[in-house]
Image 1 (tube, rainbow, N blue to C red):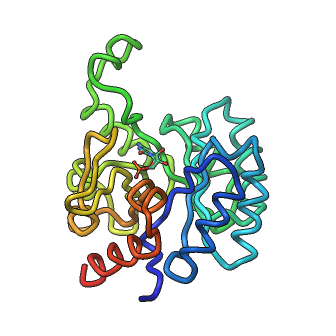
Image 2 (image 1 turned 45 degrees about the vertical axis):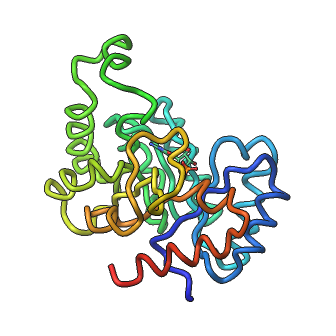
Length: 229
Ligand code: C5P
């Protein structure tokens, strides 16, 4: 079965050799990969360039959060390697700076609204006036105003977000678990097909594929599940 660009596999592995051997095993079944913070210090950028040279799409999940001038310059450099997606925290000055920095490149900027590790009690402790749900929706509206290309959101939020944004706005959804799979530490999970039906445009899948005994088989069964959606 052909790769589907809506399926993004998270390369959450200890080093780039293990990451590349997963890419090798997945072969033409997967065309889009996510690189997170854990790989940056051990060659993550070189891995991104190698993936691009192999014709793959690359999502840099770096969650930038800094003063606007720094975010703009970092975004410019990351766009320069041909990355296809980049996450930044969904605060208006940060998102606007990233939009400036991407400067006509094809890289999509995604706002991270509220980290899934935060709940209402944690937001209150940090000093926010809003609970998770309200803050997510407020930041979605701010993401649209800032001109970013989309947000990262759970499938449970995707439906309400889709109602507020136009159809081109990207909703990239982690916490995907094929029916019967172990949820692990993810709280707000959905199956691949139900996430797409809720309005997600892309699925981020980690352990159900990267920790599977047969990663290619696991990816292919997700592709089969989403092909009619
Ligand atoms: O292994 P699993 O499928 O849970 O991996 C999900 C991936 O998506 C991980 O790389 C995780 O860091 C990322 N992610 C997430 N929740 C967010 C943002 C990113 O799980 N809100």
